[in-house]
Length: 277
Image (cartoon, rainbow, N blue to C red; front, side, top):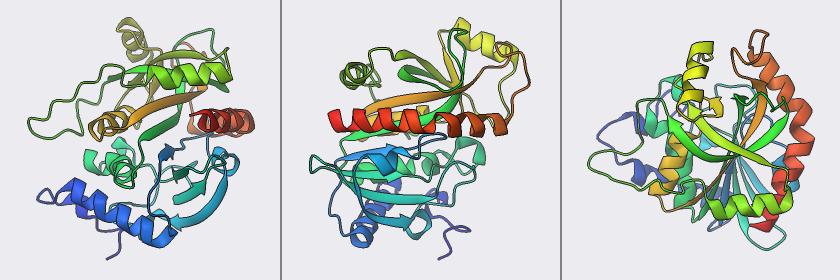
């Protein structure tokens, strides 16, 4: 099967959890690692953390694994890496994020998280590049995600599946991060559908309902991680101030540039946090 053209998750009659289990088995076979303890999805600006957290045991193209497809966005490397941490734990680093705006459906968006859970991971670290609403923030600043507002009008949960999202972004893990860097700020992440950037009015709406960060990922993945019984830790790299807060036009090139400039610092910070978890 050419997984770039056909994907088993697109068949509504399939069980997405069975596909995730099969994907986990394929990862174990191809990496030689039976189970993983922690998983990281590294968004724009965060990729270098994979080089700092430990020894890479195996790197495989994500498209070799059922349910995964080639990333559509620059800044995502399209691989799965198994890393041995200094404390003996195993980390699965996901460089192949499917965004909601790609139009493949929510099952595809959260497949990497469900696969990570099926490999045995109990902690899910979700990172992204995003716009900041607080005018005291600056491009290149990392912030903790304390909660989210899902503005996609969608959910990875199917049927009568009721999941409590209280303390979704683990207060325990945020406390660990603040021990590493007491200066870390935090905020509520708003996931919009994308791929267009938010209008100034939409940013003001997000601010009025309690949002501080705007982006196009993470919230749906976090819900799926909670459903799978994982503890969730989220961080955003503020790549720009949001529309209407920032006075210049927004562009994806700006996001990539901010990520490249901040990458050494934020990747080192994330590596220290992983070591402390």
